[in-house]
Image 1: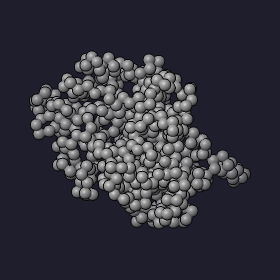
Image 2: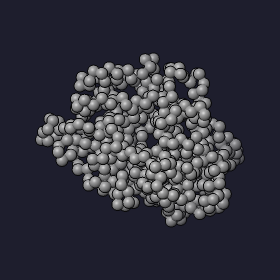
Image 3: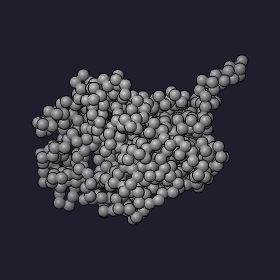
Image 4: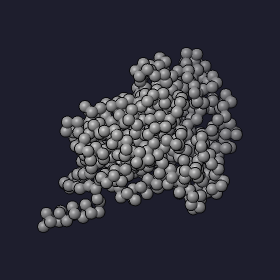
Length: 553
């Protein structure tokens, strides 16, 4: 009787949840699909859609509850560069947002004509191409959930990879399965790591790099330590003392300043560009919540900002970029802002517990900063008055008090794969082999450290912004591990690139482009019974072009 019941249960499960089978044990289950995707980012969802469109079964194993990563996590003022090179499902994502904002009911807190049409270089709302490049977090998340519903995607949320040595099972260079902390096992023919951290890639024994390579490694200019290089406004333009008593080293350093030397110009290190939360703020009185004093708040940690204001700096609101309904995508701007410089170096390799701690530290730093700006007597009157108009939106991130659910992991691990994208490639100066997508944004690295100069004043280091000559192609080999390391894994987010090349590649539209291309390659490799590394590029190219991916400029 028990065997019959189990058989009936399996049949019902296969009907309700097509695309996988499961085997139940006392403590866990085994799920199977043609392609297993690990991650809950925009790249992960788009990759799953592509697998389904090509007729294969797919499971998304997401450590996140909310899908979309930064695209639904506050980054609504899209970093696009040249929008002509954004094709395929990535473009469809922005077209769906256009459709959303054509509906009158989507404009709750302001009229559509009041919003204007400000984007990055081109209109936010492009009527000719039916695209919307600037959007609210909840609107983006709904698009991803619509994809899930329409394509009947199987998603397991809050499922975290077991990163121990027993977490990934390989046979030779093939991943057979991986296990999550819940005890569940996921088996597939092909795997895609679409996380910001590259945890599956690392657990599978694939080579990767963390930090900046020295300029000498790949013959680059903008990669290594960049002392006294200032390409944005995110540096101390006036002489500001880093000491508790200005000018007195014996008094000790203020918070948020490192005592370590920055390193020699052009040298490599294991440091990574700063993280922050891309806050969505509202200035609609009916839809805003003032910033409360956060746990452990100490105004002394923001003394550097008070000194910046005292020097005459007044760029506080330069990156309160407007998105619909009287909201912003608020990003870091200036020498002391939302970027928590130097406090994320261990994040890529850290345990889950330590990562949660780092994320919380970033949250408390940033909430404290906002409270300081709204309430501290050292804040200039004009800034204080304007800050009082802003708060967290009641209708965003409702399950998290209006605070974004995704920290901006600008960079973590980067694979060292079949092809390494380098500075010259991302500047459009080379002919990149076997394109699977394109990028066009500037080589953009946020600050990496804040240190004391030899003259006794404070300065930031690592902020780079170099524009490419033209849009550039991204090599197929940059999403492939080396064939002697893993032959059924594709990595469309932690791509094989140098630190500074990744500064351009790391944009959300590109992650979606590469997610679709990775999924296409995975399915074609299954159909052809070859490894992704052995898949003829002409076969892949034809499929990508059919799906309206942009491969060359």
